[in-house]
Length: 106
Image 1 (spheres, rainbow, N blue to C red):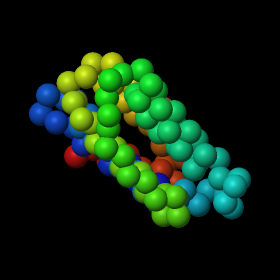
Image 2 (cartoon, rainbow, N blue to C red; image 1 turned 45 degrees about the horizontal axis):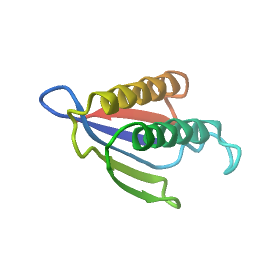
Image 3 (cartoon, one colour; image 1 turned 90 degrees about the vertical axis):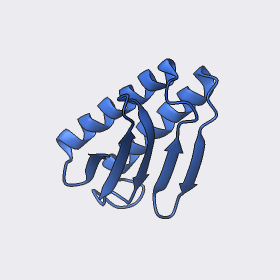
Image 4 (cartoon, helix red, strand yellow; image 1 turned 90 degrees about the horizontal axis):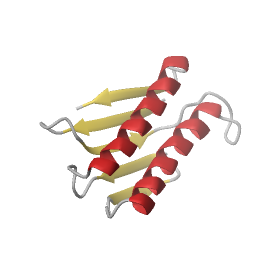
């Protein structure tokens, strides 16, 4: 299962998130859920890096499926919009494939 933990601060802003695990929907290379979640997260993070002044802290480990993102300035409005779009896309995947991906808010 892919687990996505989203940390929201007191102002309702995404402060950080991490993703770990594998969906196990299909064999490696054919796993639709893993590919979808990865595309959403990497696309969103690439957009943040290229469209804002943000320099987030990122950690990644391909073998375990671990990815961590920490926002340098959660008050950056453009970054928050991109993160909210990412969350909506991940929720859509969770609605269809809930046995393989789970979002948790902290």
